[in-house]
Length: 330
Image 1: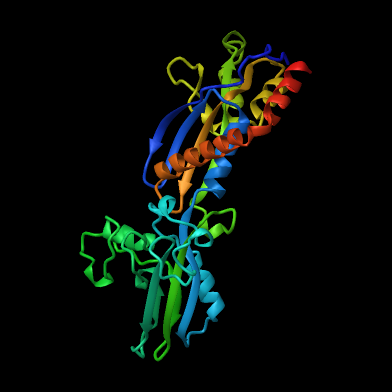
Image 2: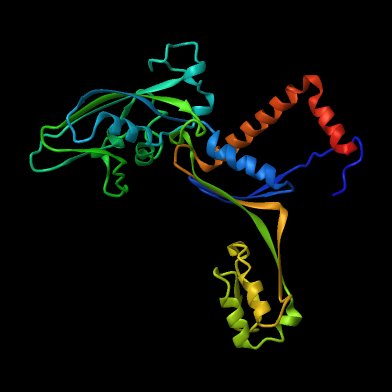
């Protein structure tokens, strides 16, 4: 690989194009960069974008069949609306409180009180029963039910509104009771998975598929059909009018090489050429609902930029300059 001339810049200017964007789903292209940047962005989205999750639980009464620790663990995994998490303080860095939860800067307090009184029916205690002291931070089920991040009572559902049952915490039989106080704090997925806002984040190299039309025309219709069907995913199809093989879904290709192997088995090597564009990636992002997909992407970019700025500020002793001179000089 040729090294850049002395004084040349390694700087590139990545471009992003949004293909699809919904509250909890996004698909976008990242171009003009390399795999290191793409993977860094993916890892930041999974492990370093902060959210709010229940971290401390004080059980006041629990006569259910589940132990206190089991209930506390289930509470911690309930996703909470976390649009304000970036502005909150980490509890370990907060100088306005002693970590007991009564702090507007680093924590949010929740309360739950449920008792089963009907002898003929089991009471399901869900995330809808949690009551938050901060209306901006509540279980995502409550936010979905309200439609605008306001808490609602289950009795307020109208016939035309889809009923949101809520994430189940525990079931109570007649006479059983659960009362608790919980403290939610800001954190990141690197510390515990309950703070990760990402359900899944994946990226793939954008494939570049080129069909040799001249060689393809030497195949019969049956051979074309056999070749198209050799792909495990629906990448190719045959035009019913022209009977030519066409690409119907470029990104359905999974780099399995099955169509290449099939072409070689048919005695037609070079029938198709498939390469990965090493500077172009397609991202698929799904969130837990704690924040929107747009917020997840933008917050991840902000955090990644902060990390790069921190590296620049640490270059007081010229370490990076020495490394660059070593790379350029060989």
